[in-house]
Length: 165
Image 1: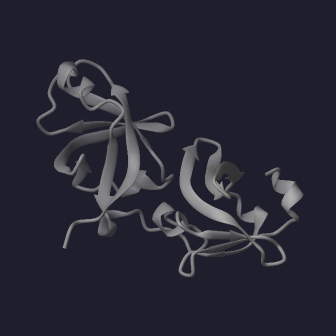
Image 2: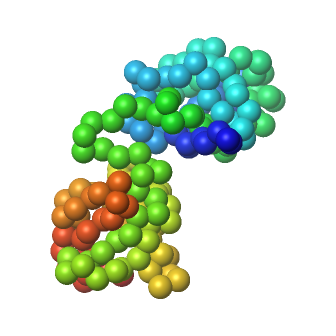
């Protein structure tokens, strides 16, 4: 069985000269749940130290001891195994449970399929394939009358015109 990894953050850039990296995590509650290690391109890399800087984090990984080594990790993704995903509240969902979901209209008509989630500071955006064309929808619970990650169905709350696609 191959390991399944989940993207939880992105390395933004080096921070300082000693191998520290500025990181953006997609989940807001990561601060209290930093695992012992992450995977970067399938390679396990251990956390030596971490701290918060504004909305992001600064992480020091073992073996990354200078800016040159840190530069090589810029723009790469931090991944974890499912057991290391942040524990969520009942009304929150991990992205892998939403990607692949069918979007249906208020009256039950198939609209499209979620192909990606774009993580933005002010809210997440669903990238939806609608008849071969990519459209985006803000992923706000208020916009959906039903979100069922187990059945992979998201039902729109309002008429299609509201969503401008």
